Length: 190
Ligand code: ADP
Image (cartoon, rainbow, N blue to C red; front, side, top):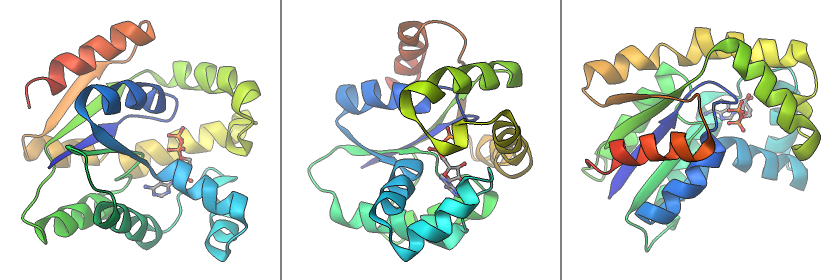
Protein backbone atom coordinates (compact mmCIF):
# COMPACT_ATOMS: atom_id res chain seq x y z
CA UNK A 1 0.00 0.00 0.00
CA UNK A 2 1.18 3.50 -0.87
CA UNK A 3 0.40 6.39 1.44
CA UNK A 4 0.82 9.77 -0.21
CA UNK A 5 0.29 13.08 1.54
CA UNK A 6 -0.78 16.01 -0.60
CA UNK A 7 0.51 18.99 1.33
CA UNK A 8 0.22 22.74 0.86
CA UNK A 9 -1.51 25.89 2.04
CA UNK A 10 -5.27 26.35 1.60
CA UNK A 11 -6.04 27.15 -2.02
CA UNK A 12 -2.88 25.52 -3.37
CA UNK A 13 -4.97 23.23 -5.57
CA UNK A 14 -4.83 20.04 -3.53
CA UNK A 15 -8.42 19.01 -4.25
CA UNK A 16 -8.05 19.66 -7.99
CA UNK A 17 -4.79 17.74 -8.29
CA UNK A 18 -6.07 14.90 -6.09
CA UNK A 19 -8.62 13.98 -8.74
CA UNK A 20 -5.91 13.45 -11.38
CA UNK A 21 -3.68 11.53 -8.97
CA UNK A 22 -6.32 9.05 -7.77
CA UNK A 23 -7.11 8.08 -11.37
CA UNK A 24 -3.54 7.67 -12.52
CA UNK A 25 -2.31 5.73 -9.50
CA UNK A 26 -5.52 3.91 -8.38
CA UNK A 27 -5.64 5.63 -5.01
CA UNK A 28 -8.46 6.34 -2.59
CA UNK A 29 -8.75 10.08 -1.94
CA UNK A 30 -9.30 11.07 1.70
CA UNK A 31 -10.04 14.75 2.20
CA UNK A 32 -10.60 15.54 5.86
CA UNK A 33 -12.22 18.84 4.80
CA UNK A 34 -14.76 16.94 2.65
CA UNK A 35 -15.39 14.39 5.43
CA UNK A 36 -16.01 17.21 7.91
CA UNK A 37 -18.33 19.05 5.49
CA UNK A 38 -20.33 15.80 5.13
CA UNK A 39 -20.75 15.64 8.91
CA UNK A 40 -21.87 19.28 8.94
CA UNK A 41 -24.41 18.62 6.20
CA UNK A 42 -25.76 15.60 8.05
CA UNK A 43 -26.10 17.71 11.21
CA UNK A 44 -24.27 15.23 13.44
CA UNK A 45 -22.92 16.35 16.86
CA UNK A 46 -19.41 16.13 15.40
CA UNK A 47 -20.55 18.26 12.47
CA UNK A 48 -21.93 20.92 14.79
CA UNK A 49 -18.67 21.08 16.73
CA UNK A 50 -16.64 21.22 13.50
CA UNK A 51 -18.81 23.91 11.89
CA UNK A 52 -18.12 26.47 14.61
CA UNK A 53 -14.36 25.95 14.32
CA UNK A 54 -14.16 25.76 10.52
CA UNK A 55 -16.15 28.96 10.10
CA UNK A 56 -13.60 30.79 12.23
CA UNK A 57 -10.68 29.44 10.19
CA UNK A 58 -9.49 27.27 13.09
CA UNK A 59 -8.65 23.56 13.05
CA UNK A 60 -10.87 20.86 14.54
CA UNK A 61 -9.34 18.73 17.35
CA UNK A 62 -6.65 16.25 16.27
CA UNK A 63 -8.50 13.21 17.70
CA UNK A 64 -11.52 13.91 15.49
CA UNK A 65 -9.63 13.77 12.20
CA UNK A 66 -7.31 10.98 13.34
CA UNK A 67 -10.36 8.79 14.03
CA UNK A 68 -11.78 9.55 10.59
CA UNK A 69 -8.53 8.62 8.86
CA UNK A 70 -8.09 5.37 10.73
CA UNK A 71 -11.60 4.23 9.91
CA UNK A 72 -11.12 5.02 6.18
CA UNK A 73 -7.90 2.99 6.12
CA UNK A 74 -9.72 0.07 7.71
CA UNK A 75 -12.76 0.07 5.43
CA UNK A 76 -11.56 0.98 1.94
CA UNK A 77 -10.29 -1.98 -0.11
CA UNK A 78 -9.29 -2.62 -3.71
CA UNK A 79 -6.92 0.31 -4.20
CA UNK A 80 -3.15 0.57 -4.54
CA UNK A 81 -2.95 3.24 -1.89
CA UNK A 82 -4.36 6.31 -0.23
CA UNK A 83 -4.05 9.99 -1.01
CA UNK A 84 -4.33 12.14 2.08
CA UNK A 85 -5.51 15.68 1.38
CA UNK A 86 -5.74 18.11 4.30
CA UNK A 87 -4.27 15.59 6.74
CA UNK A 88 -1.98 15.65 8.66
CA UNK A 89 -2.34 19.35 9.46
CA UNK A 90 -0.42 19.51 12.75
CA UNK A 91 2.76 17.88 14.00
CA UNK A 92 0.68 15.85 16.45
CA UNK A 93 -1.40 14.52 13.54
CA UNK A 94 1.78 13.64 11.61
CA UNK A 95 3.05 11.66 14.59
CA UNK A 96 -0.34 9.98 15.07
CA UNK A 97 -0.36 9.01 11.38
CA UNK A 98 3.03 7.34 11.75
CA UNK A 99 1.67 5.38 14.72
CA UNK A 100 -1.52 4.36 12.92
CA UNK A 101 0.47 3.11 9.91
CA UNK A 102 3.03 1.33 12.08
CA UNK A 103 0.26 -0.92 13.44
CA UNK A 104 0.03 -2.57 10.00
CA UNK A 105 3.76 -2.32 9.26
CA UNK A 106 3.17 0.57 6.85
CA UNK A 107 4.66 4.03 6.54
CA UNK A 108 4.15 7.29 4.63
CA UNK A 109 5.43 6.77 1.07
CA UNK A 110 5.97 10.42 0.16
CA UNK A 111 4.78 13.94 0.80
CA UNK A 112 3.97 15.99 -2.30
CA UNK A 113 3.89 19.64 -1.36
CA UNK A 114 2.28 22.21 -3.64
CA UNK A 115 3.62 25.66 -2.86
CA UNK A 116 2.04 29.00 -3.68
CA UNK A 117 2.64 32.46 -2.14
CA UNK A 118 0.17 33.88 0.40
CA UNK A 119 -1.14 36.59 -1.99
CA UNK A 120 -2.16 33.91 -4.45
CA UNK A 121 -4.00 31.97 -1.74
CA UNK A 122 -6.46 34.80 -1.16
CA UNK A 123 -6.97 35.36 -4.90
CA UNK A 124 -7.64 31.68 -5.62
CA UNK A 125 -9.95 31.12 -2.67
CA UNK A 126 -11.98 34.18 -3.56
CA UNK A 127 -12.22 32.82 -7.10
CA UNK A 128 -13.71 29.51 -5.99
CA UNK A 129 -15.95 31.00 -3.27
CA UNK A 130 -18.77 31.81 -5.66
CA UNK A 131 -18.63 28.36 -7.29
CA UNK A 132 -18.45 26.18 -4.19
CA UNK A 133 -20.30 28.29 -1.62
CA UNK A 134 -18.06 27.31 1.33
CA UNK A 135 -18.67 29.43 4.42
CA UNK A 136 -14.94 29.49 5.22
CA UNK A 137 -14.16 30.93 1.75
CA UNK A 138 -16.59 33.81 2.12
CA UNK A 139 -14.60 36.47 3.98
CA UNK A 140 -11.05 37.75 3.68
CA UNK A 141 -10.70 37.75 7.46
CA UNK A 142 -11.48 34.02 7.68
CA UNK A 143 -9.12 33.28 4.78
CA UNK A 144 -6.37 35.26 6.53
CA UNK A 145 -6.95 33.29 9.70
CA UNK A 146 -6.65 30.02 7.74
CA UNK A 147 -3.36 31.24 6.28
CA UNK A 148 -2.11 32.14 9.78
CA UNK A 149 -3.24 28.73 11.06
CA UNK A 150 -1.36 27.09 8.19
CA UNK A 151 1.88 28.94 8.99
CA UNK A 152 1.75 28.35 12.73
CA UNK A 153 0.35 24.81 12.94
CA UNK A 154 0.86 23.06 9.61
CA UNK A 155 4.12 24.43 8.19
CA UNK A 156 6.26 22.82 10.96
CA UNK A 157 5.46 19.48 9.30
CA UNK A 158 7.80 20.44 6.45
CA UNK A 159 10.87 20.01 8.65
CA UNK A 160 9.42 16.79 10.10
CA UNK A 161 9.05 15.19 6.67
CA UNK A 162 12.32 16.64 5.36
CA UNK A 163 14.09 14.95 8.22
CA UNK A 164 12.37 11.67 7.32
CA UNK A 165 13.52 12.08 3.70
CA UNK A 166 9.93 12.08 2.44
CA UNK A 167 9.37 15.71 1.48
CA UNK A 168 9.00 16.67 -2.21
CA UNK A 169 8.10 20.25 -3.05
CA UNK A 170 6.70 21.40 -6.36
CA UNK A 171 5.83 24.85 -7.67
CA UNK A 172 2.05 25.39 -7.59
CA UNK A 173 2.11 28.36 -9.95
CA UNK A 174 1.03 27.56 -13.49
CA UNK A 175 -1.90 25.90 -15.25
CA UNK A 176 -3.67 22.90 -13.69
CA UNK A 177 -1.99 20.66 -16.30
CA UNK A 178 1.47 22.09 -15.68
CA UNK A 179 1.18 21.53 -11.93
CA UNK A 180 -0.30 18.06 -12.51
CA UNK A 181 2.64 17.04 -14.68
CA UNK A 182 5.12 18.24 -12.04
CA UNK A 183 3.28 16.09 -9.47
CA UNK A 184 3.25 13.06 -11.76
CA UNK A 185 6.99 13.30 -12.32
CA UNK A 186 7.53 13.15 -8.55
CA UNK A 187 5.03 10.34 -7.86
CA UNK A 188 6.26 8.23 -10.80
CA UNK A 189 9.44 7.64 -8.80
CA UNK A 190 7.65 5.70 -6.05
P1 ADP B 1 -8.45 24.15 2.62
O1 ADP B 1 -7.22 23.30 2.47
O2 ADP B 1 -8.87 24.82 1.37
O3 ADP B 1 -8.36 25.13 3.76
P2 ADP B 1 -10.04 21.86 3.62
O4 ADP B 1 -11.28 21.48 2.93
O5 ADP B 1 -8.88 20.93 3.57
O6 ADP B 1 -9.69 23.28 3.01
O7 ADP B 1 -10.33 22.16 5.17
C1 ADP B 1 -11.34 23.05 5.59
C2 ADP B 1 -11.32 23.20 7.11
O8 ADP B 1 -11.61 21.94 7.72
C3 ADP B 1 -9.98 23.63 7.71
O9 ADP B 1 -9.79 25.02 7.68
C4 ADP B 1 -10.13 23.07 9.14
O10 ADP B 1 -10.95 23.89 9.93
C5 ADP B 1 -10.86 21.76 8.93
N1 ADP B 1 -9.90 20.64 8.76
C6 ADP B 1 -9.66 19.94 7.62
N2 ADP B 1 -8.70 19.01 7.80
C7 ADP B 1 -8.30 19.13 9.10
C8 ADP B 1 -7.33 18.48 9.91
N3 ADP B 1 -6.54 17.52 9.42
N4 ADP B 1 -7.19 18.87 11.21
C9 ADP B 1 -7.95 19.84 11.71
N5 ADP B 1 -8.89 20.51 11.02
C10 ADP B 1 -9.08 20.17 9.72
